[in-house]
Image (cartoon, rainbow, N blue to C red; front, side):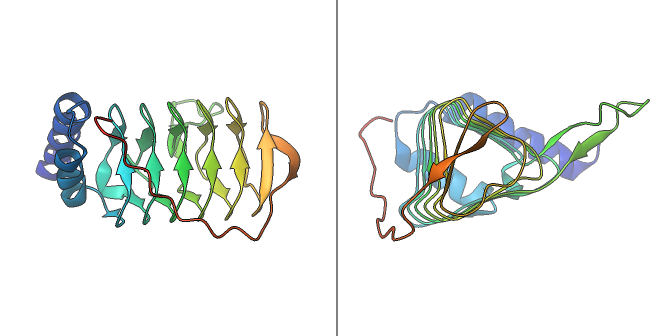
Length: 179
């Protein structure tokens, strides 16, 4: 194992096992600000969130990661825009395996989450997906392909169930105590 991979594993372990549940968002944010590829102003990462290689994870301004969220930046980047709300226990994956590969080869791709996206409780975003600006992913959905801007999707696999108002203007400001 090379030194860079080893240090990355140590950084992930330190956060995921020691700091992820530390009851001070200021301490967690201090660590994440130095470890992640980017952590926007006013963003809130609640307790219990986990990162697989934070160096490839970028979080926009005022974005909220609710408790238990998993962001997988092992091989490909995860980019989340501003004012996005990622629901509790949601997972954003960038890496898996090719089921047709005789040697169980890796398969994956970058994931991009646009501004003002709302991802519901326990939703799963699979590798290589882009969720467009203002889109909504319903709770428990499995997103296997790109979601157009201002589209509401639900189900397994996620499919369009409606449209969202494109006139969104809100800015998130969610900083609860002890989460």
